[in-house]
Image (cartoon, rainbow over all chains, first blue to last red; front, side, top):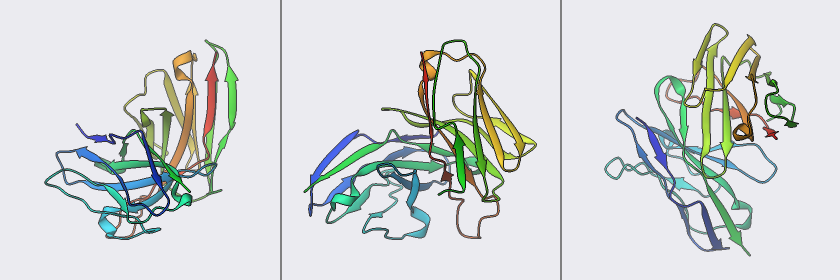
Length: 108
Length: 117
């Protein structure tokens, strides 16, 4: 069965510090992974997907199949990065399995 | 994204009452989903529909039912609400006809906060 684990419920960093939000997954098939973000008073929205190998708002995430991880990283956190972040695994027929979420707080 | 709307946005009800949450979309997407969000548990899929005639249970469908009245509308019902169904409920849509080489992004509504007393 598929599973997504985000071990940190809360993560606090100071502005300008590097940040890494951890995500591990369990899936027997070929994984497709995403990061979704929910800013305060906004809708949950796609941040990035591993298949695109893109950098969005300075964030990157690399799929590591050996470690079954898809950690989200940013070298210099900004206050506007404060939000709830969800890692998600796309399984059969387009369904998404979400992790528990990590609340990131970036302090000034 | 104003293309996915949910009504009501907030609802307080009592145990045993029947409740319907509605979702409408103007994105023209085939696929629609209902999730609930609980602190520490993330988003969990309740039901999903890949077209009007295709409805499937998600991981936590017990106590819920759905209706896909049209491509644009997907309603979630709680036949007899209970307090542990207190949660934030999200509707989402995605497009079956994704571009080749991409996977279908899900677009979320603003959420409905349901409290069952």
